[in-house]
Length: 83
Image 1 (cartoon, one colour):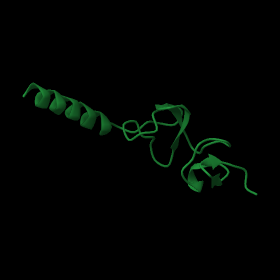
Image 2 (tube, one colour):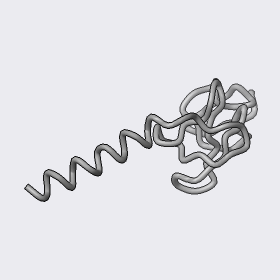
Image 3 (cartoon, one colour):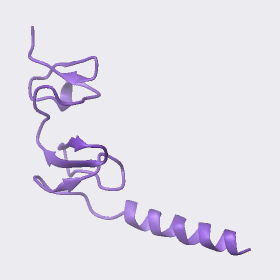
Image 4 (tube, one colour):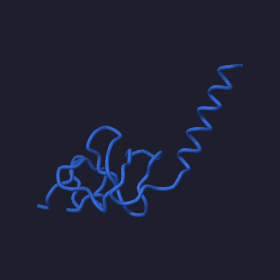
């Protein structure tokens, strides 16, 4: 019973935190849905779960898609200069 209560409290804390407002340009982000960047910005990570909201990711940054990169070229998970 105590475990269920503790899990419920944890879930409520996470849900409440996840539904908070987005993070503005230049502010701390985690790269997760718990601290998302606003609008079309992306989180440029400097360490696991530690980054800054930017308009686009710089060259050699980790990426999932071309649209995240300033260069518009995401190759093998890294922002690269277009060839």
